[in-house]
Image 1 (cartoon, helix red, strand yellow):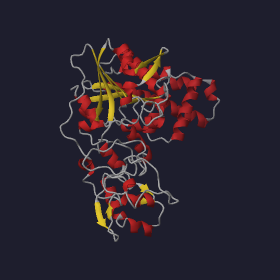
Image 2 (image 1 turned 90 degrees about the vertical axis):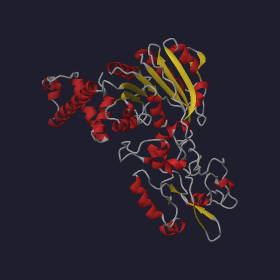
Image 3 (image 1 turned 45 degrees about the horizontal axis):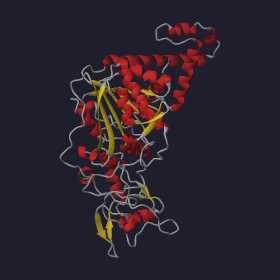
Image 4 (image 1 turned 180 degrees about the vertical axis):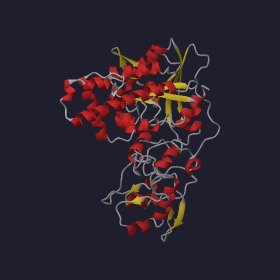
Length: 464
């Protein structure tokens, strides 16, 4: 079976545009329809002998030959990667890999993610740009052909560890929690992969509700932990626990369900690492960064500089720190209420500067919205909707900056956290090679879905 999905990823990594990629793949498919492709030196020669090929225009024939050569280069590159993989490092299969936030430190501590799977092509393409040495298999794991490719590649590369982070929206407290949500049953594919690959170790990560969620298997309801025990308990010892990443040097409160499995023939059991003695706070993570004002979208420049007079000099300073440390954009009425809100407080507790709608009426909402973070605690859990002042716990802690003419205390950083600040809170390394042209909105959402990679690093270090 020809590997079109990963051919596309490989072409994208070569900086071909999406339209060009589509044309190349289409030309290769046409060649394959004329003569079934095989990876040998005489394929092109044999193709050129076919009448169906020779009736095509010179331009089309040239495009087809180029596409065939590119596909051959792609296949040979994959084979070369397989030959050159480190022999000493343990090898990992990452399922539901997204863009690879969890994997950010694994290479550094001696683990090679050699195969990964992601459903959404846009995410898979970015993953391949960040981790070009990993064989990304883009596609639906419930599709038999995709699943079989994952298993074959994992066996060929002698995978030692399966790391699975299936989608959590079906069981998340902020999701709809539908009865028998199909996403909850993706753990069944993980179980089958464990049976087929028989890795030494398995990591499954999800939201805390994972341990209390029931799914329907063989027409009967069963809790996921019971299913894992029934299906894998004979061959694996299973360790499970709800952890909070703040206990592992991550400056963020983020509760996760963690399952660690060890194949029974392994001397070293995979266990959850001991908690760190020090809690890392927001001040530790981002307290050294200078003040940064938001860009106010619904005022002219003159009014902007009345509200935030140092906007331009602070923006310039921020850009020198990181390409991802850019001012969030907000509307005036939200910025003003947050300027009058102290660290750790919500604007809903303000007596005069209370959140209002465009028509001047009061906003109704929960007190974890229009809310500043605290300096001296870890950050609240980063969510996917992290760009808005009006969403939960998104606003920078701020500092008292001055007292205005009406004797009101004015606080700095009346804005959501920047993408760079979110990366620091998620423990993503500064040198993580994200392409410069990646959409900030896309990255913000992905980060809100991820597990902090520093915690993952500590878990994997327990195997060393």
